[in-house]
Length: 445
Length: 61
Image (cartoon, rainbow over all chains, first blue to last red):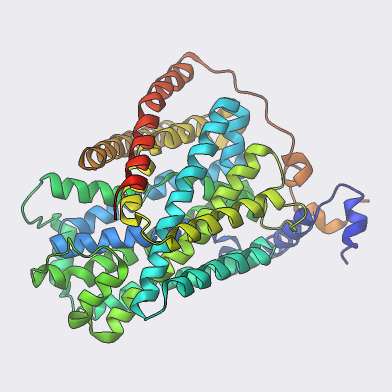
């Protein structure tokens, strides 16, 4: 039987420890009983959430734009490839988390020094705040499709984000988030209502084509946007901190890898579904340059997907913004609290976690308020977010590679030569692609 | 006495142990060179970020 919490606190045992230990007891029992499916269920979460969270409002809009501009073809295998890259990057954060029991921000701060620690935290919190604005743009645009006033959609979004923090329990927060993130799969029935022929889809996967118009500046921008929609700095910080907060250990690496792989697979399917759902606009030669939100796309797709399909598309966009708002604000909280070395867990009560919860609440309120400012340059801000995220991706990936090769803290979970070769190539490719995308966007501003 | 169920946590997983910082890493030549290259990148990228943000905020709707 558990001792009262007050008595435990006298022994330096915190509420966070008690809740995490009770989760670990279930894990150990399932492992001892050989109940592998239950074990996977208990250990999964961070990988699924990070991948489905990254299918956020702007990302789904980018996939839909790709389908509307190029139809079914080259971009289907390309999206699959980007999620393979995302898996390889995120798998490193899993190993870092279980080997060190530390979040990404605190590892940078402690191992590489305060300069890089504050820099990493500052650029993440700033980039996340701007990204949060774009998530609330997606939430209000989805609501607009259903006739909800802007303030009401944003208010509901804020209320849901705040309610999730009121749980003060990592496990419950994670399960609630998984339920909500399942809404990302709404793009699959929407795609089926576009009545795609399986032949062209299979042909695209096998042949990496067609790519109407060939490689040019427009297709390059969409390729870079799709890469930027799959691997971003907040994912690295979020998954590592979530792995630690969940209490995963080196014994759980296999299940954590499976969790990340399943998340990547489901997110790739949802991304491709968004592309296929929007492909009728390509066949109908509709000019999509005027479509700037999920609501615009849903309205344009109504004649092809029907009312139900368009509604699912709009609802999927709203859900994408909502889940991302929750995961991104949590990643800011983890990074800020880790850098300041204060309480950093979703298992904390409000008194012990005032910096942690305060950062998420404040960033959510600021982002929601910006969306409600009449005449705020929201579209330009979405563009700026892409530039900032891609330019800041290179430092994030370099920190990741340095830390995962740090044998003093990683032990036998450090990168081997094959992982370094694959990881290094991906990091170099993403950094160069990100820098090109950032510079191209800046030059077009 | 520590309750039995807390043994389910690895000692390094407790909040108290997680508050103990790792020592600063001694940087080898390659790591130090990479971090200096990163300083140069940041020197170029930060003005671009500020420019992109300022343009976005000031852009008329």
